[in-house]
Amino acid sequence: EEFKLLGVEFMTHPKNGLKWDKYIQKLIKMAYTNMWILKRLAEFGASIDDLLLAYLSRVRVHLEANAALWCFSISQKLRNKIESVQKACLFIVLGRHATPDYFCNLAILNLEPMANRREKLCRRFAHKTFKHPAHSKMFTINKNNSTRSGRKVIEPQTKSARYRKSSIPNLAKILNSS
Image (cartoon, rainbow, N blue to C red; front, side, top):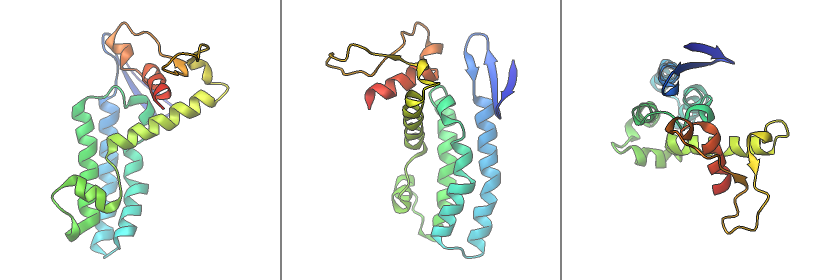
């Protein structure tokens, strides 16, 4: 079954739960289609700072759309595809200053890999959700804070891999780890 809710396309599978492949492929396609802006700006001789700003505002926003929903349950193949979009953009932004090493290019532009970026976005989303009065009920607060672990919330018990890969247990882990 496929349905769209608030701009996010969901595809459910009877055994595997939510599948994000189609939605992530759409995000990647939108990012690639906006990459032409970088190419045109580079052709016109825009500075690296301008190209970087165009990348951040026109391409990367597509790769990070609703990341807190899907980042825990996507395959490694999709993660690699997302990183390859950023890798291609970095080559365009740096032009002749680009190196063959992706991580060196990230360091030159003071950026981080998309996986780290998604982790930060999820951490920020978890903290905001936990503090918001309407949504804080998603987490069970640990009333016994005298434990050594010092966990803020009780992590839900997961019996299935499907639930283990969903957002709520992973957001609870994020809240306890920070």
